[in-house]
Image: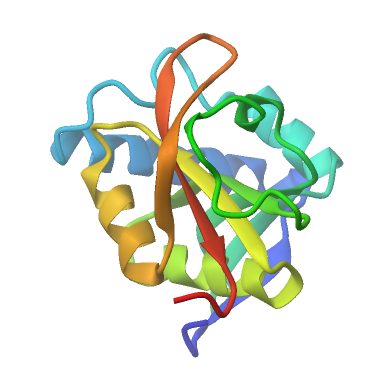
Length: 168
């Protein structure tokens, strides 16, 4: 985890800041050529509030300022039950990282989130849109392995990755 970044559970009173971070992340994705992910108001305020109420939303702080956000959801993800490909390991509990975003003011949000998840889980899964090359590069550089394609409830395909702690 980056030295100056801390993680705390997100709170409902953080919602305005978190939504601004998601807006900035969407603008960044568009500038990087990812026009097809996080459209039509996604992630909505109600989804973020649900994550907070379910205690799976985490804010990344630099000092007192929230600079990033992600959801870390333990247990089986329904959209990961079927994969065109193969998960590295299906026998150990995993956590899924969803809705990771940065305000762009500092680097290291993704690695900080992955380091945090790795402290509690030996297996981390994540998915992203085929146009999100920046996220693909990040997860591969961290040590995630490409496993195949999963489909969201909407039917949209996503590239799926898995990280197994201490596996090279």
